[in-house]
Length: 143
Image (tube, rainbow, N blue to C red):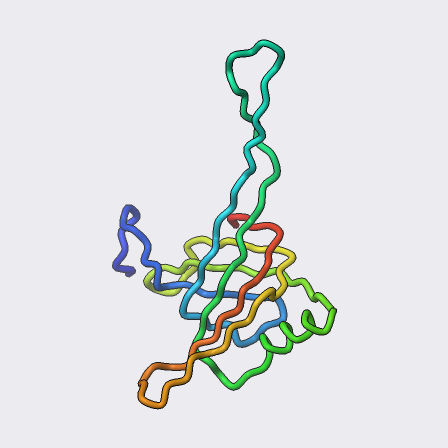
């Protein structure tokens, strides 16, 4: 029986990332699950009220961070973009319950790696190497 009651908050630490065609998708951090709709302001004739209408919606880039593993899947995907070939993929950020079961998910579409950031190396440090991948996405939906 799970420890979480229906009205308990869900921890931000139980999640999975799935990306189409990527088999090594264990990440320690996900950021950028948000959207914003432009505000179009206008006035009609002698209207004293400034009217506001929704414009275009844009989605933030999703940043994924993970401890470095000796696997080139993400680097190869990024390298294709650098070389001029954009391979777009779909994926999901899945929020899990205490028992690992899916509570809910956000699906993203038309993603491609816009930025890769390597790790900081320090001969005196004890930290794990962490790499970042920033995905440009065109749409996010709650599944």
